[in-house]
Image 1 (cartoon, rainbow, N blue to C red):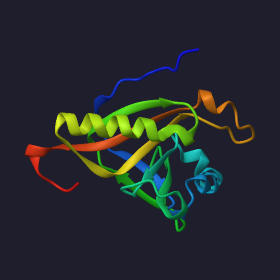
Image 2 (cartoon, one colour):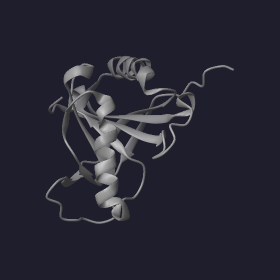
Image 3 (spheres, rainbow, N blue to C red):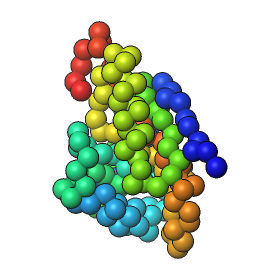
Length: 160
């Protein structure tokens, strides 16, 4: 079976209300954060979970990331950071396959950004459209993750 290839897209995304738990360590530890968010805020969640990645380079042993759950409405939380993520123009690419293989999709996105003269703005978003369930891992070859990176055009200035 051939590997499914997705194209890079430019999308305008609306602001998104989320609850997040900032963490440092291994990316695989994000599951603990998602469990905490799900247990405490499950009835308020809306849409697929996502991780904000603050690192400029892959750094799995000492990564800076934030598991997040989109929310239907603003809630008060002592444990989680509840806020609205900025909307705007994003380069987006869907990745089918295990999380360990996301690197090739990141490379494709970054190459596209350079070719088009876009500046990338952190944090990067990984939106988990299809992944492991609460009780079963599922088939990692069928996981579907959308990588979203906010962009600024080189002629627009701004922080990257």
